[in-house]
Image (cartoon, rainbow, N blue to C red; front, side, top):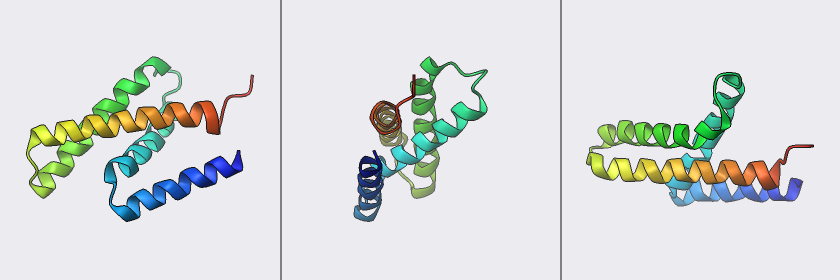
Length: 102
């Protein structure tokens, strides 16, 4: 498992260096989802994590677009892509990198 984790981190660093910000932002959002899940574990059912990822992705993208002057429809599309990336990474890490012990 350690090799997979190392490759994942290396890929994410490479994506940041190459300017693939959607992948990098998706990873950071996935980390935020993990923290939110830990803090709100009694109040946030697992089925709502993808929705939370989408909402946070869109909100973050719109906030960033206001800073750089991007139009809001493009920001919403970018936010959905970031939220989807975070949800996919959450599933991947949960299933293959750090599976739960049963």
